[in-house]
Image 1 (cartoon, rainbow, N blue to C red):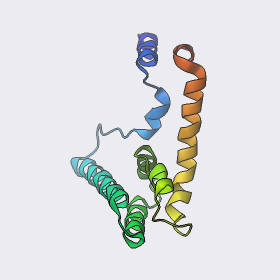
Image 2: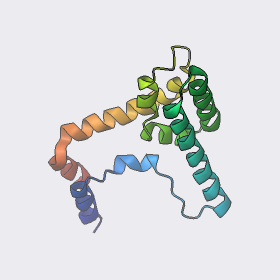
Image 3: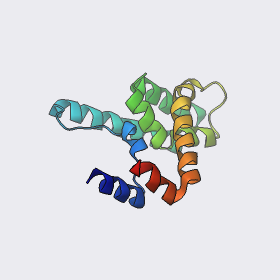
Image 4: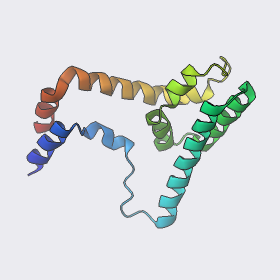
Length: 134
């Protein structure tokens, strides 16, 4: 049965490698679930503030708030990478070279994700099927 589920997951484009980026809320106390949801929402609001920033000061403030909230929390840093933070920071005309602290924290997670995507493209659909079956 597990083989069939793995094959179906491969056909549907679901990849087990992304499981490390997921949070399993099962068995978690409700206050912890709410805290994680609120933190993620806060990070998304600050990311939107970065996108909407009209001055370098506003952009730096949004970046500083995101860095402070994510701290060294691996799950939150991965979440920021999945949300497109690296691409948004790179594309920002308001941020200079001095705002690299958050980028340095996100870089390893961004690189891991980029390499997984390259591997998926290289394998293609049939490669995912065979790697899931083994």
